[in-house]
Image 1 (tube, rainbow, N blue to C red):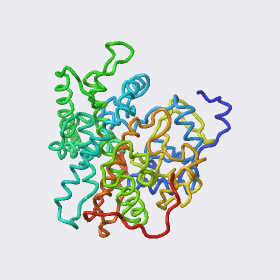
Image 2: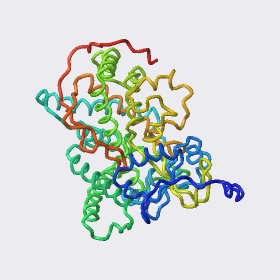
Image 3: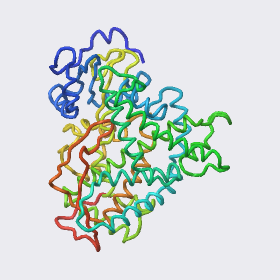
Image 4: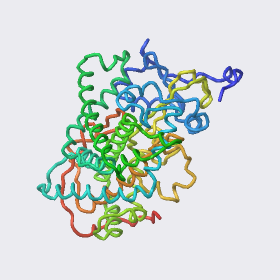
Length: 470
């Protein structure tokens, strides 16, 4: 939607924090981007312009402007150039592709995430979680474990079974390391003032190339084995292989399958593990909410393994996850780049300007959230959610590019959280405070360490009863 020149002539330039010559605020962004964004919002308002070396970066916290970028004038915006590293790693998957190709891939992928398909995945999610709990039952009580590492291992096993019908436990260490190296490389590539192509044999590039070969060998091997079968199966890979576009020949080729699978492995593995690790951390610091969640799980499940039909009744459990996503959104920031000049929040945005939308910052806006730093799952009750602006809460993005796997992720996280709290108590190791690592995703920098104990019987709820979250 073109902006009349007269309108552009009357708009203001957004405020800019003081910075160094040439590099602007780049040093602060490298050191602590979350602190930079929060302090700039507080000092300069809802649209702030940063100078990151040669890049103009506009942090947008005004909800009308967010809606304008994501929905009203979405055709004027594409993924920013800072996604170039992810595109090199993931190819043309749903996260990085654009235009008509993205629309086609989204259309072909959507049926795989319909509710009737997700129902079967719930059984697999519960089964893999039980395998982990069986392993935990053999650990000496009080042993300190990195819950984040455990959740990474579990969600990768679930992705392997639901996406590929493959037991990837033997590959989990190598794949996990390859994903870590790949994500760090893409983050460094986005932040680099001079971006060397991945074929230049620097130590970092060589590590990345090895990691990518590890990922490609696994994915292409599984695709090749599946191609030999008469029936591609009912997991996500089988569904993606089976779907047909506008013509019988309009199917995904091996490269397209590879790109979508790697994207889904990353999204369905990394982000859900981060969410769960932060949820266990939060509950370990909130004994009242821990007791309330345990009591609900005991009442609803009565010792059973949760099924898809149980999830609507696990209301507090789901609100705990929603509140965790508010405080620690895995996609802590995402970006768009303008194809033409625009006006956002009353300020000028040049052609090629980068717009940063940070759920982490939006979710801590006192104008939108009462006591924004507090942990209060009841803010997601129907009564308190009523009337909340749509774009105030963006854990899965917004607009046409809302995460396709959000229902999958929340079903998985609810099942895992319920089963773990049903059988174990996780006591936080106070000697290891939580530190955030805002890379491509928001993850706990040094893990989440807890002492592991078996539970038995119904939890005793202390304190005043909660109002009904129904």
